[in-house]
Image 1 (cartoon, rainbow, N blue to C red):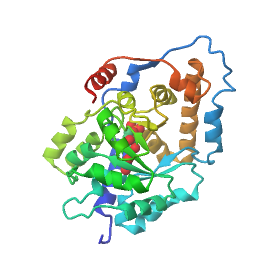
Image 2: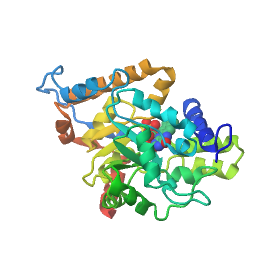
Image 3: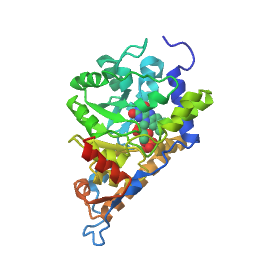
Image 4: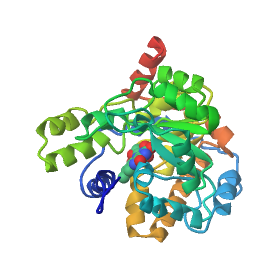
Length: 335
Ligand SMILES: Cc1cc2nc3c(=O)[nH]c(=O)nc-3n(C[C@H](O)[C@H](O)[C@H](O)COP(=O)(O)O)c2cc1C
């Protein structure tokens, strides 16, 4: 049982937030800059009339944030029930689509730690009255993290067991999902994929700073070495397309990036760091940021003459190197 004071999991969470807000934890290269939408000088639609789908969906959403929301890993609250309220607060607001979150490494036994099963997953979902459970794949982070879980065998089977009973979305946390892995996840029964690709917040970078603070030189070195490891998000959106709904996260920083993600085949896009920064200021700052992103998305759609998301999905894209190389290589090798 956890004793008094913050647990290791809680402490780690607080450290992550502090590091992300105060240090440079971004991947070096912005892969979204390799993706271009083709301008249409004659859009042949009216700006004010379009995007009804987007505006309708988002305006209907709650007064505060008004879009889908996924909480962070709920392991802390499963370990320490007094933390449940920090997640359950989500239920006090009218968030239209809510995702619970657990880590894939915790679905199998790690050392003396027991594996989470279906009952834990149900508890996590009930905590935020979730529509679906995100299971995050974060083995890059685990391997560079001082106290990381290093066993990954039979994780796919464990995901399959949950997916047989609950709606599961599989998500990477910054290193992207390849075609082969996406196929395996689909066979395991997941209902969606969040590609969580390279290009935004780098958890290797975050762990680098934690290891440095704790004077763990090996982990510090690993964090630095794997700072830019992974499949770029725009490439992963293409490679991981196996016919499941796909969410693009990883370095999405504007509504134009959202438009690019959807043009490449994603169903939706998500942001972590920009929302975290706004949330530090207050709910109003989050609302302002979200409305700005929506305006950018609408502008991008207008400028390619797309009146709804299906139009946007059908729009052509130009993808430069190095992102284009990832896509070619993946297609060649069935990666
Ligand atoms: C402070 C922080 C905590 C995060 N915790 C989780 C988590 O617990 N589970 C998860 O699936 N992803 C987590 N993420 C990963 C994000 O959801 C996202 O995939 C990644 O940060 C890339 O997005 P970004 O570049 O917009 O920050 C976290 C991100 C941040 C910034």
